Image (cartoon, rainbow, N blue to C red; front, side, top):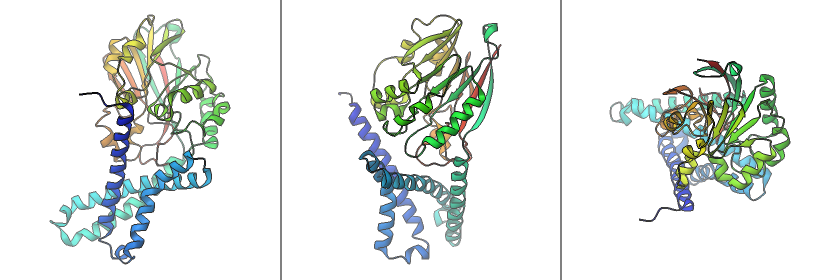
Length: 376
């Protein structure tokens, strides 16, 4: 059987996403239909409202792609907020159904439970929006590494990941993040993918601002899945303009005894059906020393450990971004957020500095990570 091409794979992925998006709307419609206030609205008006809500986010993206900035940004932001709100509402409406046995166990309590679910969902949606507006916190880890050279003891690495710069997160937001990094004064700065959200064009004017990011040992990065979606040639050119040196299945000895290894995103490769063994290729020929592995997706940690990596820095998961999506996200990515160990390898999974889709964070705040190396 022939392998599915990358375009066909992406089309399948898009179909699944739109199917899920439609399913959430159908579920919400079926549950709202139990409310007299909702059914009092004429059916054509209800259908038009749900149709507009369903269309808002994808239509905003299409308008932006075709250069219609003002209506596109407004629709995209409204649609993104609705996306997060819909997920939270559906989660609590499902909880109401589970508590009442979908109306079979406690039929008299169904309406009350669903009303409570809607109220809780709306309050949590507001809270999630405010939590995202507060910006990322600084999260610090201290890792003890066997064989670390004495002169590297106390070296501080600052990690940015999943900024998702674009129409929703732009110059003003980025200026605040640059100031946060400058205040930390890292020895080494790494960007572990998804610098770009969906299009390179709105991010290109931010390159001079990104060039303010600096560290004595340099600013290094790897691509994320969104760089693949936005187009790798244009995305890698933007990284170069921003002064971020990309490691694409390669390594660099940034000082004696300290080697940084990086791969193009493993999730996008899997999704697009790309062949090869990027982890082995990236480590090939790397000199001895403390090896730090950069991979946007927290995958193949065992392979990296066997290749001699002592520290792995990843992102991608956003820790689910909006609880309880965390539990679904943990199915393909068991390493969600925080510090883990895989043999001699310590793995830090970043929650993300920005947001993807909904500009919302529910119980899972965004972050900037600082890792201090210590002799173990």
